[in-house]
Image (tube, rainbow, N blue to C red; front, top):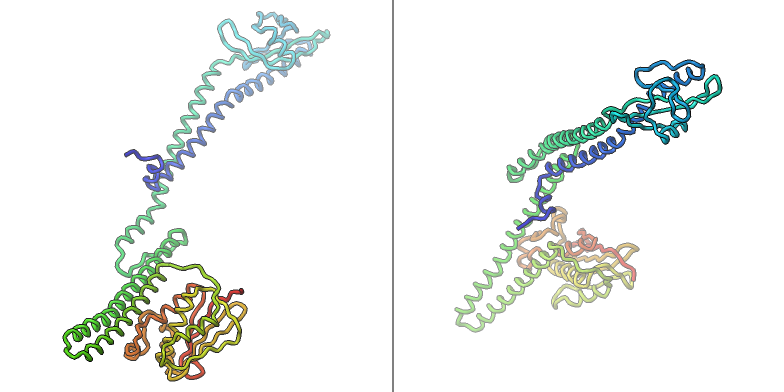
Length: 445
């Protein structure tokens, strides 16, 4: 199967890609400069020749104006002709054509070809002789090797560009390799990290230090999540083992019992344990969905009516519960299912420990709305208040088990409120029991 250029490129190492990019950019830049310099090399050489011819022409024109013959110059050939191009200095005829003579009289440069095929460059100037006759003083030099110099110069410039690009590529290769050497050491350190280990943080405050710090933070979060998962799995297995074992034992007793009344009582106990197991599984599923990030869209929920409905759902025989609201309406940004879960679990928790009274209050402000649940039970000691919302945590293990608690209700309350930007706090109620305050962001309807 053929690979596309993009796949091939992505399969190369970072060092190779950086080197290739740097060498390509350098080569393109230098080749462009070489081509530009090659185009400018010819005009530069011609300008240099013109400067030398102008320098040779100045004393010759001065001599002709003074009525003297111009002196010979080693760097150029100086001739005196009339305005038609006829020599006046006794020398041989020039190879200048009419167009060349016209250009020279106008002050423009001219070219000519000698009988030997040599190209000449000429500059000229018209000056008056002492008798007033115009004279054309010209200075020329052969352009021997001019074309070869331009071609060879362009080739040398291209060669220098290639060599410079190769040198830049090698320098980039070794430079990137040196810069990435700490990354290689870091990678080897990652491979050999023991359980709970951390990467060494470089002293230099550069990108590698930031990478090491962030990676160590990632390791810490990963270990925290793994520990929470192990603890959650162990606690869930422990909690599920108890009702399952109880149901099995009671079912065996019901099957083996000859007395119908005893079998009926055992079946009632099995039903109670099944309900406890079902509630435990529902709580585990709710927490699993919360951990997976499932979050339905929020909507305005009216808390006064929800509070009355939650109190009405309490089973018979529960402590006396009433709703105390100081506002006619209070709207929270949540969902009906989340509000129902929070109120049901808070009231169910209060029913387990209240001696005779539960007060549910709904308070509203401009930005938040609060639901306060007070009971007159034994309350929660201060040393346990920071952990009552942890999963499977129980203040009094035996009492929570006897009341059917699995330590998940308050955890689900805290998770549901937290996902909507709220919080749950626990304290002491005026009746001496526990006070749970749920604070939601308010919404205007």
